[in-house]
Image 1 (cartoon, one colour):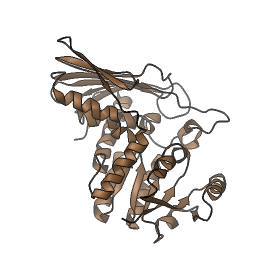
Image 2 (tube, one colour; image 1 turned 180 degrees about the vertical axis):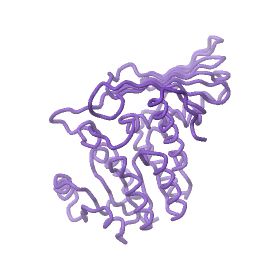
Image 3 (cartoon, helix red, strand yellow; image 1 turned 90 degrees about the vertical axis):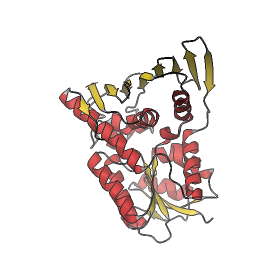
Image 4 (cartoon, helix red, strand yellow; image 1 turned 90 degrees about the horizontal axis):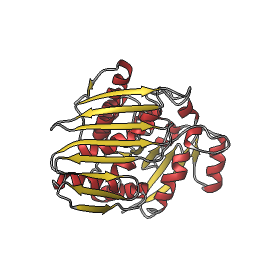
Length: 334
């Protein structure tokens, strides 16, 4: 099987910290064939590290090149669907950083374009492929917890400007976002992807949020309640301003509970007194994701996190946005 020649669009922090090293493990499958970035700093860095590889400042030129088979899109969120659609129209497959769009309208247009062109979009949502998610699904489906009636997910972290340090919070498009929800859309999408894979799409959402900083979007902390079929109610607390310690995830059913506290294990406690510890693989989630995507390419199969599922998650976030603004329970588009 011939190598897939990749055009890398937007080789910023996420490229340096995640995808570059993961792709090196699959050098027999992927070949870095070109780069595109707008800054001279990135251009000089790329030319030094990848001498002789073509460099573009205009992504429209890169996606039209015949020697490019597929592109990795890592642009600011509002540009994700714009660049992806142009690449699809140019006959390229796309590996696209999450979220695939800033709103449902643009997400639907991307899904439509993928179907029209017959090309493929692979969403780079590594949390959807985490071992934690797969193990929690096994526990929920095993019946050990009985009828699952409640979950509580708390995920707090800090992302903000750090003077002199190259970090996510220093990017201008995050400091002054041109998209709704701020860090909830940019980072919280990971948690939404995890929850929807385990529990499905909620029927309704009620959300409240607080704005503390001037930058980084509309809210610095959000608390959400999701209602599902079969009497399941879930709560989700999310912040990229409050301290990141003591994050946890608990699922309760009529026969027991499953508890995770970010220490590589899930504790399952049944009402009968039985207690088990389920070990979680410490495999790098980016590497695990690329391994799964590579397998899908080799078998010509679809990965779990399709553009349709990514659109479902955008619909959840759009309902959250409406609830935050209006202070009411909102139905999620089905």
